[in-house]
Image (cartoon, rainbow, N blue to C red; front, side):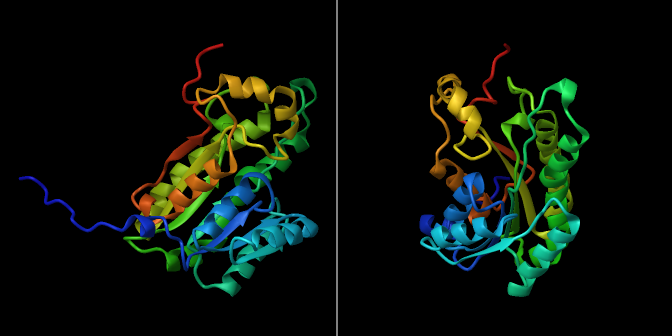
Length: 270
């Protein structure tokens, strides 16, 4: 028996519309977090961004307010109590949270012989523990927002460093991002029945403070090796975030989406 075709279609404009949605973007004051926050705002969402530095929050709120309703909160998300505090502030503002973007992250570059214990603790606390703590603390708000037709969304920002081995090894960073990719899959399986999807984006080289030194030194070389022959742009990241947060991705969970111009997914052996 041939299944009956689904004749209910959403108008294209509505499919990616986030009007009325509430979102939190951690690390949203700069780089990839700012790109994502701007995209969500332009799609109609009301967005809270966070950063460790109060002055960075104030400046980002000023700049992003051009695109929509944005509020900035300073919080050190490497600490469990600060994750809980941020979650409480978000839930005091709105009982539901439609979109959680776990973007705040850190990197520690140092040779193998001298790599210190704090290079693991600082990176794992922010890159891997913090997303878990925030999902845990914001679960009631995510559950209130999600429905079978339009689930709440968790979007974790991983990295292609968690997919392939970069030429310059970043021991704790690469490990934390690979761990975050697997945490994404684990949470997706558990939270799917609760009308919450969990996906990750794995950015390649995008202009950001974290990547600044690398791109200044070898940015042209990296771009030349990418199948698309360029670095990432703001709209590349904003677009995939809006897609994952919209009704267009309602049936997608547990995925890791490389946004890298094909660098990691088409890499050949060295």
